[in-house]
Length: 288
Image (cartoon, rainbow, N blue to C red; front, side):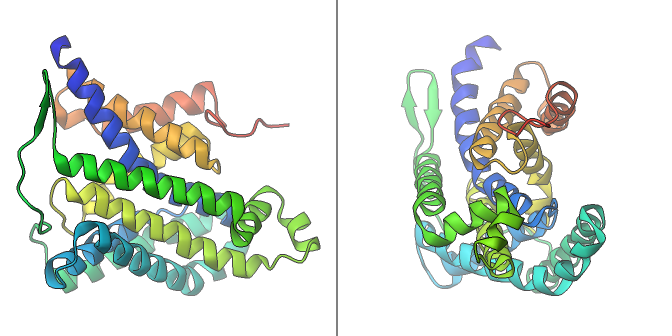
């Protein structure tokens, strides 16, 4: 099995890079709104299906359909947060997190009602894999990898240089100080819900491009997304990227000793190890 190591590493890097996009969205929402929003599962599905509609029914290429996935998932995320979750945030993070689980069930069933339960695939060209010695990689994988990297660069640029990105960081770092400086926390919260869930929707589409999609697409990735955020440090966007790479590569390398059936258990194991050895995650702030 060790002769598969180079191929598994390549697969893990691709998988981790794609996983980083929804993990960034999840951790951004946690950093600003102060609760883990598990409705990311349904919003990943919504983004995947929004991109499917744009790609298959409107005939847009996949890299353009991603914009549609971002907009639809982000809008649904902002509206559902405002209606269903925001009124509960005064009752604490646990109550809101539980409500987000209920919300994801409602939204998944809305997708099921609209599209049915059958598997659906994107309209993509059928191309041969490229071979580099014993390593094989598909052109679509390379395109998805490039898109994910470009999106991450855009996200870091937005948070570092834009006025609204700086406001999001200020609220995440110290909400009271941000309020004293005149930053509208409610406006920032709505933007964060849109921005975070939009990224989750894009991640759902990118992860679905390599396989097929159905109403449970996001549910299958929720453990890996949560694990990436926890491993990297909840609230840390660079940490989410590192955590996603750890989980993505770990899942692929686990195939050396485990059946593919148990691949998803790697995320759970990563969460347990991090919470035991370093509860704040790789780049999370230390407790004072």
